[in-house]
Image 1: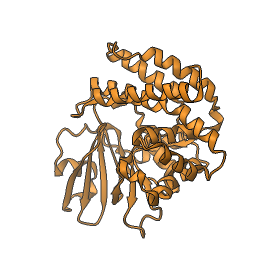
Image 2: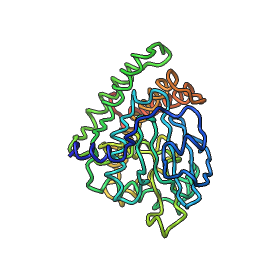
Image 3: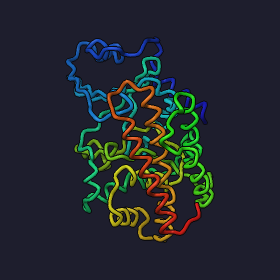
Image 4: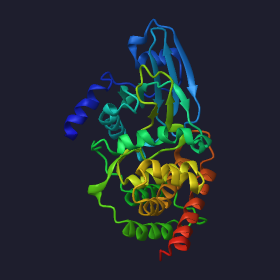
Length: 327
């Protein structure tokens, strides 16, 4: 199955070789999609990306694309072939952007642009949006699709820590090894089998939710973009990641979980989600320190990561205090 997937990925690749884009110009985009030559292009840099440079390119023949130019050394922690296969396998769900072209030698992916409203954190407080927020997550989790990558939260945290140690392990202000030991205990308590993992997005921040405008073209009201970290994971982790990105009040978390679980076995499902909350925060904390050392994007990675680390410690304390866990 994976070999068939790689053949598909190859079919989406440019076969003429090339080098990464150093300067964003009309000609640089034409080199990536030669069929745009002779057309007027409207080029707009999309703000908010802290891993890649993103550009919306509208052509005079009505086509609308997003060009993602990979951040420096992101191959250390992102498998682009896997990302492309995630898009291919999830495309029938109708809640992901369509892959147009994969150009690994130019460090570029091109997907369709989905016009709509990009959610903000405060939108998760709006009761009239809860069904639309949860719907694409449920579609993905219950799709029956098997993604090629197993995203085990504990394994991924340890992988990022290993990458960080190879770059710059000198962060004594953070108790990373001790925290990972706590995560090991939590993982044993959660006891989620790999066989029960489902396809997950694993990066459910508000910026990755698009409330679509063109309902004739896009049948689903909400789309999920940016599948760099997608894989088979516990559904609890995916939702915990969303909660830790948005930081909604407890009562809103309950309401969103009631919508997701359809009010079934709520005490257990809330408990399991709480168990997984420290994992995404430590994952993104380590990601931030890695980016701090390799990225050319102008962003305060250190303080972004510091907040993630502190939030993880708060959730670990909550598990000890509220649930009485000996971790």
